[in-house]
Picture 1 (spheres, rainbow, N blue to C red):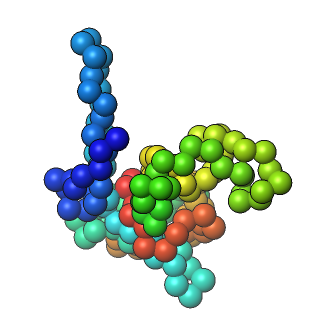
Picture 2 (cartoon, one colour; picture 1 turned 180 degrees about the vertical axis):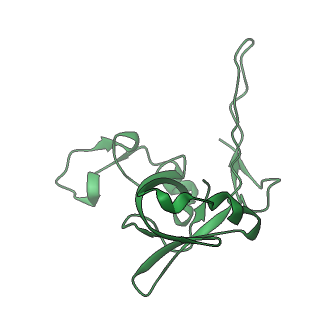
Length: 140
């Protein structure tokens, strides 16, 4: 797998798909972050880019949302190549494939977390979320 710089400035790395065999369709998905996660003073918020604020209209009526975000602190060739881990970092746990765990170390750095909505104001969603990391990119 070759690592290179993306044409999208907010996506620092991308992976070239393997050369396609005749008749094989290769789908490359590019996601553009629309905000970031901030943790401060015991609060977790998603702060959207200004132009996406109108998309939050009536979101406050919902009690829970799914948040797609990036494990951006794990974007290293070594961590991206890891395919098996001991769940929760416990060496006594059986070795398990990363796709069968909640491991942040994986080839695809996109994560999904269900969060309880506390409030929505302008371009900021306050939520109760334990699993998201400060300053990570928010996708949807």
